[in-house]
Image (cartoon, rainbow, N blue to C red; front, side):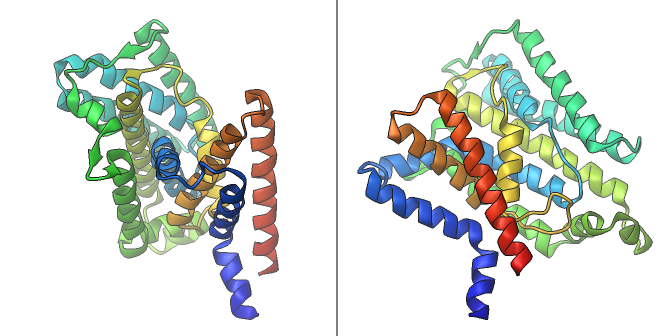
Length: 312
């Protein structure tokens, strides 16, 4: 029984995902079709990339509320530059959000400002910039920018490119967190920043690294989203920071930092995506009630997970 309890505690979000999948397979005939399952993975791949950056930031004891706005800005910049070639559009799109991630990191680490305040400011500034440079209009991605479109819609074999990118990023992040000195330092400052400083860790460098990483991933997600939609939209990714935090917390990462991992976050993203998919398959629930049900479901999941963690 003790081993069973440990398994339930460590894999609770995965068990929730499997339980929901079993329920859906009996209720909806189209749920287990390859087309529907692939659609869930493709649609949530961008959020999975954003949630990965959020997880690393939260593990260090911080928070990043700017990710949704950075997704929009990265997609808009890439779409505006797509006429000059996919390479230029992708590089500058990612560079623009990475730069804002550096700004977040510097203000948090050097200026000693609270991450909540800093990233809230960056979110407002990035969203305003995206709306300003586009004059509040969507920017179409020209068909000539085949590389950019391929990132959002392409396949390698039968695997969608966004799904493959997510897999590679999560494995790389897991290796960084659990097999590198930087990963050890991220967990250390998340647990106790002052103690880590006394052990020789430089918290300022670590904070700069995690916010830069989050900004880079947000830009990449925005570029993939622009390629998938065929346009850069300044109003894209509203509320993604909330979903990214929810997926991270559902995956067992402590909001206080210092404990968690990346693959449970990915399961949390899939759980969110499956929930949205089931609401759409139901068909009789209006979008507004879907928001209410989503919020209630997330609250129940987090409360359930906290109970089993405390019991453990």
